[in-house]
Image (cartoon, rainbow, N blue to C red):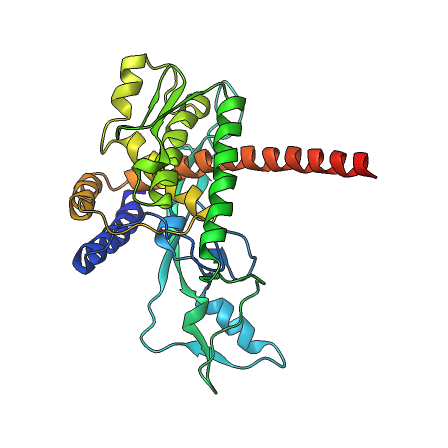
Length: 331
């Protein structure tokens, strides 16, 4: 598993290096700005999950073999890989039975009666839909999705709608899970406390809406650890220690926050921060010595993001129910 994990980690470290060379912010997950909110399989329209969200831009992806299958279909143009295009890594986790060295038979867990299995990580390569082009005119493979592009003319209104939706989600999530919210008018410190409290500065203290949403989402991500087993039965002091800078839990929270911002369609309106280079250096140094860490953190972040998004779905169903009841009363 470590060899594949190292390949994946090296790919992410290369993204960090590119951001540093360009003098731009590094994002674990590409911010939403138009069309798709994440990377999807072109064949199935199923979104990629876990560490694949860190490896892939927001687009549709397919293998070389899938492109050949498309070329074999009647009535379709013939496609090829755009000259100079590079493939992208997609990884997946699977298991294989553990077999007895002497008999070759699968080993059985004496407590559960089930086969013992060993996990392994593998990867394959895919191409972005935009890099699959027609041989006759160079046009890209058409998308299978129908979506509205981000309108820069209505950017302020769209941002406000996204912000209002996030605020409702934040309040709903905290109320449902018994988390106290403390918004302070001044100060810069934001944190989640083991006694179920989220403290964040007021939005007026931030230079962009994206940075405020990201900060709140980061603390929400920490809180999911209390419900998803990341903190288990740790003592309060150990929980606080786990959330220190550049730790396993911090990595989970950072990735979760960016997943949420992308899924909630929060455009990145922030400028490159002054500490961007230091941020990249710190995380790249952390990951170089821990090639398995990014895969594990991304999987945990996916679970944390899904927990919060499930709250969003519940909230919007309740809001729709209230609206329907009001409509019925007015008739």
